[in-house]
Amino acid sequence: MELNIRELFRLVLTKWWIILICAVIFGIGGYVYSQNFVVPVYEANTTLYVGKNADEKGVSEIDLDIGTIVVQDYREIAKSRLVASTVINELGITHLDADSLMKKIKVEQRADTRVIEISFADTSPEMAMIITNKAAEVLREKIIDIMQIKNVQVIDAAIMPTEPISLSSKAIMVIMLFVGSIVGGLIIFLMEYLNNTIKTSEDVKRHLGLPVLGAIPSFKVDKKEI
Image (cartoon, rainbow, N blue to C red; front, side, top):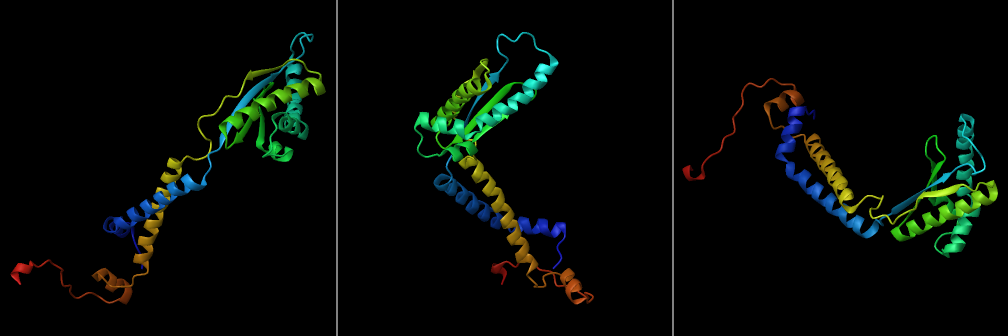
């Protein structure tokens, strides 16, 4: 059965309740799922500045270019097993090993600067803050020790995040409401598409290829008049 835009619009208007029911079911299901199975994830971040030593005078364009390249070395140190193991040992972390911590720590360089941003995500906002700050502290120590750079400063220490970076229950519910509406629309379309019942004179022409000589109009009859 072929459906045009007008027929589809008519179907939606006449069978809107199917869309509503599907949307409500999916919305409630999404909310229940998010409340029982989705664990909020929080992310904390801190920034460090790695400059030149105080005895190095002047800053040239070459220095800036070299500094930007050297920052890549700092990123690798921050993502190393050495830093991860030190963080775990000093904090007494038991639910993560060094390899897992290495994968969860994110290190980014601010474009064309010597500023490094370290971030860490965890289901506990407090633990996210603690690990991020400890990672920055350990990185600072390792840069001073390995690279012999003493001018390493924390710009902004990590604070405890209050909002999760994962989808909230409300967001998941809204998404599932939308998905449910689409599913309801597809159900309506399939019900009509698979229905071969002839309802109108246009259906006679379309399915049988016969001319319509006449049609009996439908009308309502008052039961009191019968």
